Image (cartoon, rainbow, N blue to C red; front, top):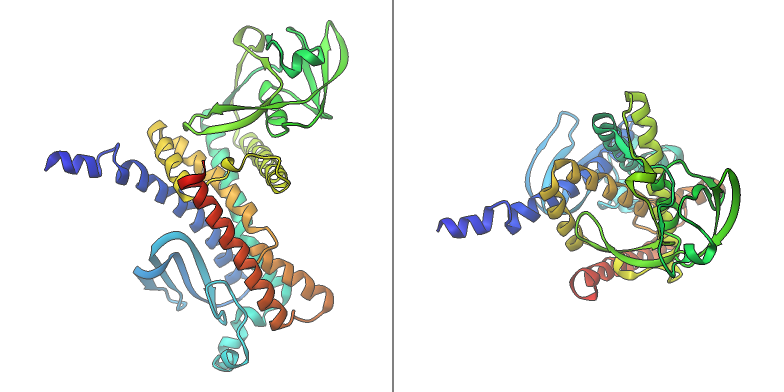
Length: 380
């Protein structure tokens, strides 16, 4: 019996080793996202019927003094805030019959009766809070641990690599990559890693003089710290302790926040770049994963330590924020697109058009979810 319990609930088990870290990561990201909607909605004077983590049957919950039902539901793959006047968890605008059922007091605080700027602010707050969560996580980590950086020096050039073909030599120092100045070897890796197949311009410092070369990064498969097989673009240069002279940077509280904002900006830019390249078929489909892949990553991160798990929360939070800003209903970006049209034409989009676009968007979202599930289970 003890062996069965260890297998089911031990630190290496599916439940404790994978499921619990996965639920921690997902719940943290979803809670912060929905809290953004809730707080800004309340600040705008909008009534809230329910705040839910998960979908489906309610497991536990309570009502607060404002009449909001806070609940935890059985299917933990998301969450929602249901405002007064919402027909569904996706903030669908009520029809004439549904609107008539609202009392005069409810109409005053209903979501659909608010000025367009209040609705837009409430909707965009979810993704923005996701980005804010990432900034907070990195600020805490940078403030607590600092980070090591290495000089952007070339110690070795791989034979037959794009760097060798471009004429890059050991001892060269990177000055800029495609017009962006670099201060560390990590900057070079960041600017190159997502640009497989793109010809980039490198400014190098050699013997006190700047030279300009061009190289086209090529993709190679590597294993990241969490054990995932990932494809990154490289030009074939190596840095080491002797020429890189790694140093530790300690941050003041203010400096940690600035560095965290910069790091979050880099991640947002890299994610957006990946999505654009993915749409035109220039990225490997196996780089996209769904809940199964995230669960595996959460389990690996938990084994490495709590700080790794928190970093995964930060990375996933950025991804959720960006995906929700895509202009596809029922995502937040889809609602924002409708509000933008409404602001221009000075009236709400017709219910018929909104429903048709919503159905199309929902179909696309379901197709995407099916795609990542297929990737998780069979495709990769």
